Image (cartoon, rainbow, N blue to C red):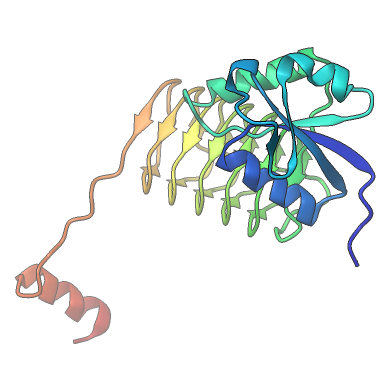
Length: 232
């Protein structure tokens, strides 16, 4: 039986991210999506996803913050700074900012989460994890016990963050990145797809993985590895 919708939500955004966020809220929360909004100069239609699209300059009068909450549905443009700025603008307009945690994830009652967070399906979030404001966590990640995620950070899919890590503000962690336990990551860091982080990172650092080396079938190293792993 579908839960009754007793909370009213306006979503900031008019692109794929906003569409996806709206779907999750409609299908898996007690929020009703009532409208979408963007900066005035980007309004190019009267509706989006069959809901009204209104200029941000008019959203308070049409959807007042004492009746409606807001979610800023933007991704990681400008290393999360664009989403951060719109998050601040929504708060300054008086809106409470909703968070979403997918019911198809594993969490514990002591999960501490800020506002305007999006946490999608198939997470394993262990006890005593703290997640700041305006954090986006895509599907299928592991957040180890005692880990802290800073404000405005974006974590892509299948990232493994071991226990007691500290991730700074406005970071980006790419698909399949791995962080060892007790790692400290400064603000504004970019950890690329498949990167392995085994030491602390200063603010602004970039970690890239090496491209996967391809060994042809007749290479002696390829034959040796196959023998080692598959007993050929």
